[in-house]
Length: 97
Image (cartoon, rainbow, N blue to C red; front, side, top):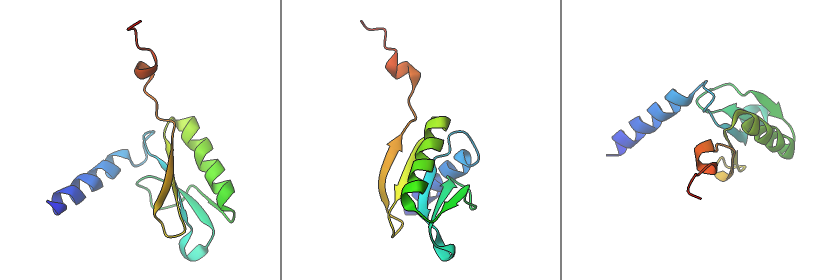
């Protein structure tokens, strides 16, 4: 079952990679240090920052513009929080009253 979950997860990210649905992740910058903003499913960062707060602000701005989600990771790479700007207009325009 775990193999199937991994396959489904990989397919999910592959389908989103490079699309408007891709989320923006703020992650540790690896060997280069600092912080990187990566679009989901892509290896290369879209931007790098020395300052984590600036990286977070930029990722949130990009997610707002794209109607997507900014995923903020901590120093260990674990997800710390998400900022969701992926709203379905139909949810806001309910005609029940």
